[in-house]
Image (tube, rainbow, N blue to C red; front, side, top):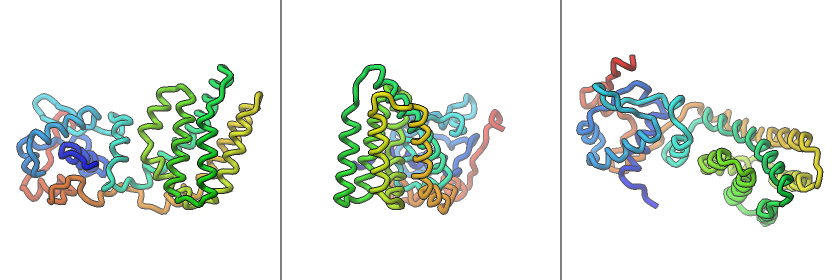
Length: 276
């Protein structure tokens, strides 16, 4: 589905913040000037700025106008979720490796919480087993890595849901797109059949009436680190910094930098006194 103009403007500004074209403390031009620079109507621009305001990557300072905040300390999961939705943005290995490390630590935690909940209520989540079997069957059929990755991510999402922990579930939802991207690449680098046999083995161990929980989780953590090592090495070969490949704003202007626009307009990005 095509993105609306406000969404395209928001994507452009989000990307420019992430690649460092817009930095913490930069003051945006007045609304009228910014709309002219971007060649958009003011109503659409205003809607886009509200989106960024809700993400806390810009703020309005009395007497100074609209100022870019430090997304690393102010923004939340919705900012990351929107980054993952911008196909024109190459995220860079730094963020991808950070995400991989987080996912690797979250999975054993989710497994422990899901198992503890299952034993407390004495019930199995048959959907996890069904998804695992479907994944195994489709791998045997030779389905593409992208299709298998979507099934594995769906399986992990079900594991997160089985924990009953809303924060874990929200984190999983927000990272859905980037996890599919990472798992797809991982499937291109590993022996998929061997991986799925190991995964089925963990599911069988977890189905035991009285498994050694600590041993199971430790083994699973070790396996996850081993499994993703080829992906980690692959990511390390990529450029560290993010890069904007083309403009998310589809108005024919191919805008890639607000700084460049301002310089061509004879202006610079001011920094408010309160941010110096």
